[in-house]
Length: 203
Image (cartoon, rainbow, N blue to C red; front, side, top):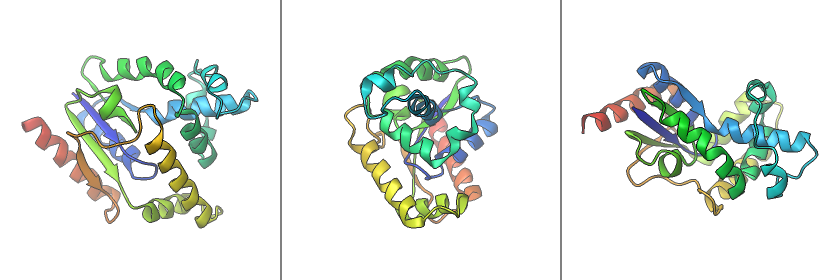
């Protein structure tokens, strides 16, 4: 069984995807982590994340980099959004993600183009969203030293980049179930996600 979980930053898609993977006993891939790794590797090499050639040259990801705590910070997220605009980067990471999705038994993948590009034949697709204000507040709770206004501006900028890019833009697949977590606890959101997946499986 393949479960595709898409949505913008801080919508809760990562937590929901991990919970679904645990519930169904499936491996999980946070595809955004791959792009964060490329973004961080590009910056560390002295390259420009906005230049396709620089970013594409850093797509051979070392497994050790995927466990680097730096990949979880806001700066890495911003770098990921910048390098993910490049078709060459997306093409380089496409096979890795598709192979993960199609492994024996299936998998849960979360990102921004799982249901539309990576696994369009997924058994269940969820599009997780929340208002930009709620998402900014969630990020602020994680890093209270950061300025809320800056966090909100960054989220809005990332939304624009992700939605307007020419290569695999962020959008809800036509056959994906929408789950708005703005007014939900993570526990409630997970239960709703499981119910939506179960409903899809029964169809």
